[in-house]
Amino acid sequence: MTTAALLLCLLVTGADVPSKPRLVGSVRVSTFTGLPDVLGISGTLHLIPYVDLEGGASAFVFSQGWYARGGPRWLFEDWRDENNRGATLRLSALFGFKSIALRDSQFQGFHFVGAVELTYWLANHAGLTFQLSGGGTVRAWPSFFPELRLAWGLAF
Image (cartoon, rainbow, N blue to C red; front, top):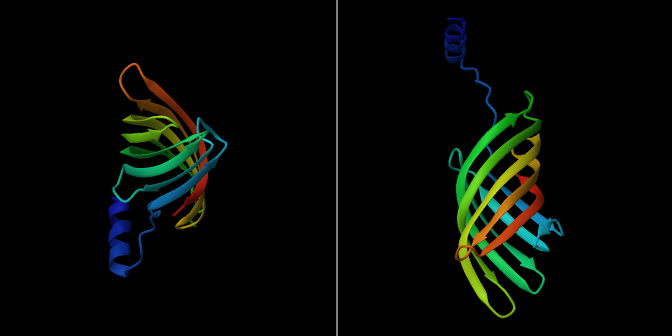
């Protein structure tokens, strides 16, 4: 009953109900922190609630690749204060397509990763993000190309 009275009071007075801003997107870079990547860049859109859409490219020794993937995202923990400063921890499971061009050949396959992302929010839509992801690409079973990456960047 108290909650209903408080909401009614807020509606009558026109006061804003405080809420935490939603994550819109993030851009990340990885340098010498991936296996087998040497350099990578990725971007993620978080416009659909509970869904990540991500694309990226990476360079290996004598090769390069690109990917597009998407999947569910869960906000595991939210430590932001009333000024929206603080950290959030998100988990995601992403699936999609990856193309890898080696020196003498090229292959594509089903791509999947699990990711843990920690973001420290400096303001409503400005934060520093760190993502650890692991998984791989399956070309034709049992041909498996593993991936492990630590990336950092900006969230907005």
